[in-house]
Amino acid sequence: MGVINQISSAVLTGNDTFANSLSPVMQERLAESGRIALQFNLVNIANSVSNFLGKVRQPTQKTMVLSEYTKAELLIKKPGPTVDSKTGMKLNNVQAKLQEIERRSQALKIL
Image 1 (cartoon, rainbow, N blue to C red):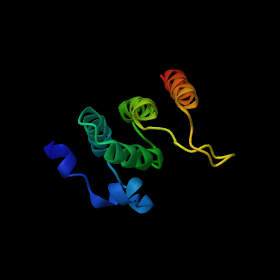
Image 2 (cartoon, one colour):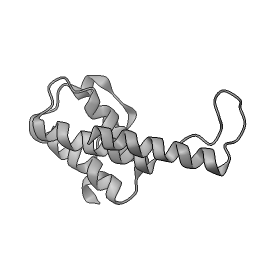
Image 3 (cartoon, rainbow, N blue to C red):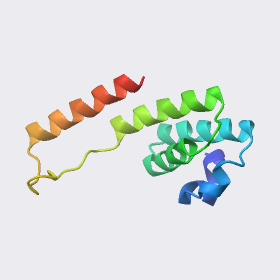
Image 4 (spheres, helix red, strand yellow):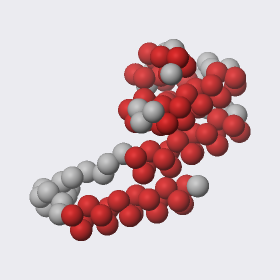
């Protein structure tokens, strides 16, 4: 948990200028901290880390793999919208379940 507490505020706020000055070791540590955040169900932190690593110009192979796993797990852990965007009505149980199945199939495509 100490690793997550040491994440720079630039990562959590999405500062783009900081993204390209990371060393390969720091990229890997940041990707690992995103995985740790998911283990502790800290979805917002994992999402911020994943978005930040997506802005890095030349990520290492390990960073790319960990980032893709994080994106796939985020698709599963993050709940989908509860309101239909077209009608503005709340989704019923069947529609919510279909949406969850679709998100899980997207996650499997990533993996």
